[in-house]
Image 1 (cartoon, one colour):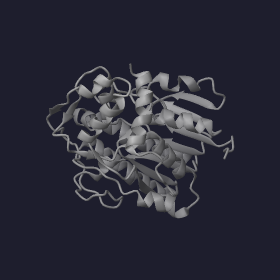
Image 2 (spheres, helix red, strand yellow):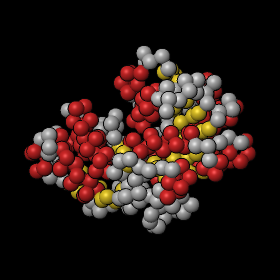
Image 3 (cartoon, one colour):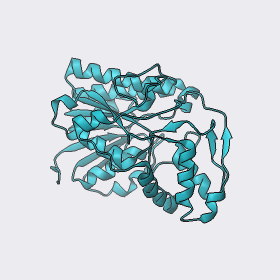
Image 4 (cartoon, helix red, strand yellow):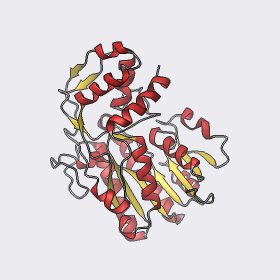
Length: 327
């Protein structure tokens, strides 16, 4: 269904991995899309294909600057807030900057969205909020103590969003992302996500380094499932579905050892010698949650969410993109 062209979406962090995929998708659906980014972790090449699109607006600014936030939300119907400093290790190394961006910047965006009478504020929450809770699968209302500064910032986001909903009437929905992967994800840098980092290493016949014994497990979630959840959260007309939090995942978990096996298998279709690249095991990483598995029943019941991609299906799609773009 083609969406009305007068509806306007602001995607913060729109030059990042998830944000640029959201920009591409919603432009294809006929929305006017504005992207707010300061390019601290996002990339200009991610938004370069959209710059000549008549419905796309790039706003260079920083969510830590309230004036930039007010400017970006002017005339906007929906905010999809993706801007953040990700990575548990980054937050451990520099908790102050992580807090400035993820908490102060988030609060600026809430204030600006409230002042602009935005219809709904959908934001990227995190599975790190579950902290030291050992219960599996992870259910939205059962969390533990955070294990990193990053996890604290993402939990504070949820608390602020709840207050803005109850106090100011701003509709909010938080999406707790579980280990998202897919096209446009950056394999480079000290804080690169595990899948693109491992893929690049394997393509180069370098040994991927697993932190620990490889038996930590994750609910790896393909980008198209995340896009689907953002759209459902933005457009739902179910009054019971707003002002709350949802797990955004597959509802399945795989160990890091499983993951590397899949990567080797699928990459070997392009270069059969990759299957022989050895794996190296290192120390466990501070702040890591041992096991992560989402219950997606709440999203299924209230948003009619049905993930379209399993880990294996998503890896096959992603590896095809990685092979063409990472070599």
